[in-house]
Image (tube, rainbow, N blue to C red; front, side, top):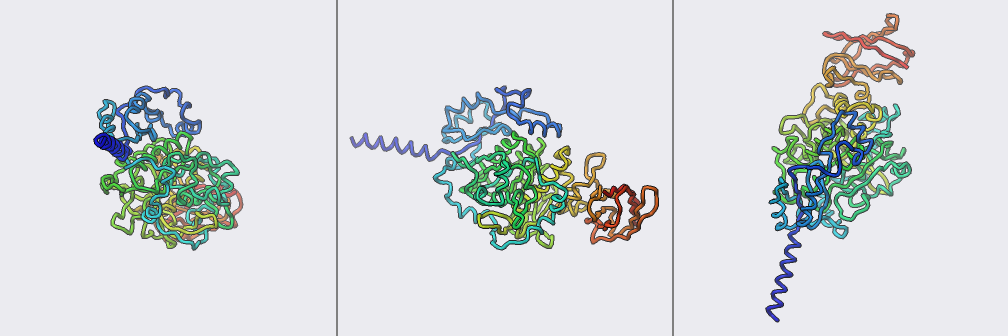
Length: 545
C-alpha cells in the first residue's frame, strides 16, 4: 500500500510538472497550401471597404491574405493544449503546449520554426490584475491631475483649421491598439461614439474569455480621447467624427513577445474590416524573459515580429502611426519597435516651446532612416482617462494619437490619396521638412500645409524652390506662402487682367516656416501671385472665394 501511494504521488507530480511546463509558442509554417478560401473570392474574408482600399492603392491580393492551412491545424491539434489564435500574415499558430509536445511539433516537415513567446498559459479573468501596479509604474510616465487648455495642443497641428474646413474624420475607420479602454463606456465625452454607432468593432486579444475591451487599463482610454473625445468645455479631439476599432493587445500582467503577435493579429482583424488608420501607442525592447530582449541592432525595420506586421500593414494601404518611445532620458535613448518599421509614421514629442521633450526617443534606425518622422505636443497633454474629468499626462503615447487624428481628417478630405500620398503629405507639412533630424524628424505637421502641399512628378514631396500657397482656394483671411530658402521675399499680386493689385515685403523667422500674409481686403476672384527673392522667381495662381 505504501509503494502504491508513492507511485500514485509520483504520477500526480509528473502531471503537475507537465501543467506547469505549459507555455505559449508561435509555430511558423513553411508553406500555405490550398485552403477553403480562394484569392478569386476575397469577399469571403475581406470586407468591401478593405477591398476598395486595396484597389485604391493598387495592392494585389496574395497568399498572406489567406488563412493558415486547416490540415496543419488538424495535425497540431493532437499535440497542443489549445490554440490561442492563428496569424495569416505570419503563417503561424500561437499555441499553448508543453516542451515535450513542442519537440514533436518542431519535427513536423511543414513547420519552419517554433518560438517561445510567453511563459505560462494565457491570461485569465481570475488573474487579470496580477502585477498590475508594478508594471504600470515600469512602463508609463506619471500622469497629473493638472489640466491644460486643449485648444493649445489642437492649434499645434492645425486641428481647429481642419474642423473649420469641415473635416472630423467622418467615414474614416481608425483602429487603436492598446492595453485597455477602462471607463470609455462611462465617460460623457465618448457618448457620441455609442449613440452614433461609431465603435465599429472591439476585440480583446489578451484575456481568454473576455467579452469587453472596457477593462484593465486607462492608457487606451487616454489615446482614444485624443482622437475621439467630444466635449466642447473639456476636450474636443481631432477625429471625433471617425469610426473606431478598439483592440487590447498589451498584457498588463507581463511582458513577453506574444504581445507582438497579438498586435499583428489585431492588424489582420482591422485590415479585414477595411481600416484606414492605425494608432499604436505601444513599444517594445525589454521583456520579462531577457532572452527575448531586442538590441539596438535589431532596429532595422525588418527584424521584430511587430515591425514586420507594421510593414505589411503599410504595404496593404494602411497608415500606421506609432509612438516613438519614451526612452530619451535613459540609457536606451532611441526608438522602440515597431517605431523602426518602414512606411509608417513614428511620432515623438515636443514641449510648449516646441523643443524635443526630454523623454522622447530619438533616431535614427540602425539603417540610418530618419526617426521619428514627426512630432506633436506631448508634455502635459489634456486627455480623458477617468470618469470625473480630464487630466494631463506626458509621453509619445499621447503625441502619436494627435497625429493619427490629423491623418484621419486628411483621409476624409482626400479619399483618393494612396497611403503613400497621405504619408508623404504629412511629412511634407512638417515644420522642418527641408532639414530633418533625428530628434524632431520632419518636424510638427500641420493640416493646412498637408492639405494644400504638392507632389512632384515622381510622386515624392517637393524640396525645390517652387512656391506653394495655401489654402487655395482662400476662404479665410490668412494666406500662407512657402517659397525659397531665404527668410525674406517680395510678393506681387496681379489681377486677372495683369494689373498689380498689391505688393508686400514678407519676412519669416526661419525657412522651415511659411510666410503669412493677411488678405482680408482681397475681393473674390482669380489672381496671380508672383514671389521673388535674391535667386528665384515663381508665379502661382490664387483663387479667393
